Length: 385
Image 1: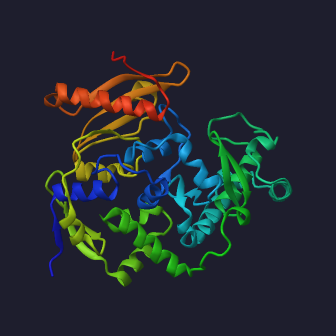
Image 2 (image 1 turned 120 degrees about the vertical axis):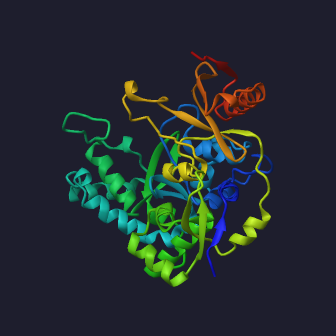
Image 3 (image 1 turned 180 degrees about the vertical axis):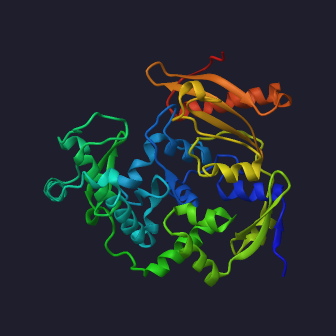
């Protein structure tokens, strides 16, 4: 049988549906369900309007508010934090397949020059002793200092040790106060009656769940979804599982070979037209995290420029893509000031001049008002240069 061909419009619809962005972000809120459907939600310290994890969840259901995530971690233990391609929140139900990732990260971090020179065995034991005896502790409970000239990526030795033990799964995030992480013994955070899976079973589940959430993807995209298996392991999984082979049309008309989930034809048949609502997405939204795939499917070139010198940025420090229907129509730069209660729009770019209409202007104004409510801001100011 020749591979199933998925035209670009259908591919966009599948992609947005898989990522919870095809339907209007309304209705009953199930925060845990949103995280389970996405697979993970990236954590980020930067708060320009609202931190990435809150914004990502809000984009799927705008009844979500910032205080709703922590109880799933602190009280209900329905989610845990660890490292996918970056620090993320994951459903606790995925913990059995995550044991290999603890070991992988332990080995990666332990042999890196960045961490390795700070991993004093005596300090490791002291940190474990204190957490065991005192309960959950944040980095503020320790006093070791950076001994060299401080740079933004350098951390005190105790912070390096806490992170190493967190990566390795010996410590886990117990809860947060604001965005301050508290570390506890993993055995006091993680359920101890979880199933035990072999390494091969974990690899199979990681690839299966990745493809289910992607809907379709290349082997590299499947592997990078969790970033918890290597290329040979992903290749071996594909040889055993033999997922459906497809060809996906790009925005430029070219075709890419990929794999699809077992129910891909059912998903295609069930597709509905995406909401025409204009959406302000976070730069770390999982639907756009892979910039190469974003460009291939949507013809939208997007780069995060936070770490680019200001005079070399094309757009700005923290720029939000604008999704309308099944296409990206522009981007904005906006900032929230919680002291004054204002959300200020400082820049607004559309992909083409023909997109500049009063209707789209009104859609953006409405979405900015909704976004301001997530951050508890009372006023939106159009402060365009």
